[in-house]
Image (cartoon, rainbow, N blue to C red; front, side, top):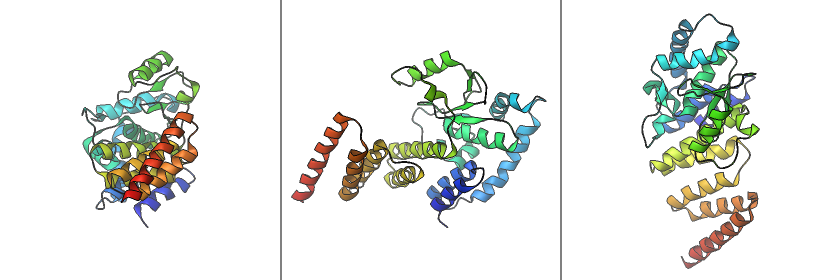
Length: 266
């Protein structure tokens, strides 16, 4: 079975195996990686975290869990220009630093194993955690509580226009979380100019969920870098079909015509 199929199969469990799925994503980029071995070592981390948690009801242990991870050396990526290792889960576990989404995924796996209620929130520009019924979110990189005012400030710092909306604070499902991780890896591999790796991530994004115009555009740009005009043209066509923005549709139509003219000249 390919790493891609193994990743997708993890979503078919009664309770989706998020950490294992993320490790199979990593295995697609590192053929020597054995996800089963990493999962075995993760048991040791679980014991370390569990041993340091206070005696509180499970509903009050989410923030102590995140803070326990910080005490064990986990922290947000410090590099100004993040690299793929900050989102590849096996590397995050080795380095104990990574993107907020990667740290959140580790916290979510531990919470599941320790019966601590916790869910992920795909907040614009910064993945967060949520305790069901609580009046705040949690930053997986600092353990800090974020109330609505803090979330508004975070939205502005991330350069996101508009007001804080209820949808920004809603828990996301396992498929959405993995799709976010695939998008993050796609972006990081593109930034590192590893376009073949970015193409794997772009394909995985489209496999994991309903296609979006932006995801087809991202893959089309990667095909451009790889000098694959047929693939780029296909994704531009798909993006045009999915676009609900009149200006974007016009721009995509113009790009398609230019691509067809360039191809005709050759």
